Image (cartoon, rainbow, N blue to C red; front, side):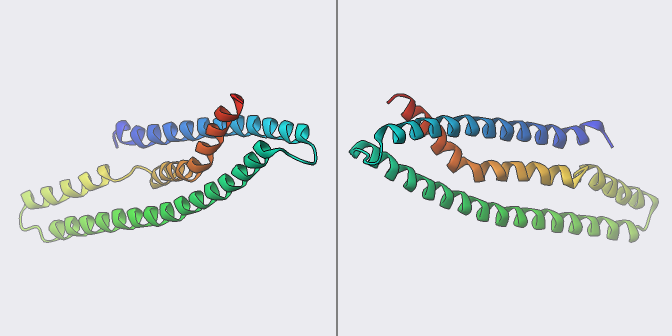
Length: 164
């Protein structure tokens, strides 16, 4: 099996994991910054926060529930989509393999046998070298989709609150 057939899924997975790792680090920095700013403001406001602080607390609660809801929706849609893609790819590969085996078995000449054999070899080399690599790559993309609503709000809040 050519090394490029193995390298492409591994490279894609490595890139996706790096992107996910960077997003998680950025999310961590932003949430830390937002927590520090909000806790400082809450401490300074004391037991009776002013209108601006009450608005900020209200916004914080609403954003958290919206982000959680969007994240759950992304997770559900992502798992359904992932299952459908894997099922479709698997069934297409099974049908193609069955057709190639049938062509090989029903060969009436040496030329047809070689053509059938070549078709099977082509299917074997074009199939994923390691389905776990592809599944891992798809999972990192799904994890990015799940984290996106939280990441987006946290980084936006960090920017907004750092200017106040």
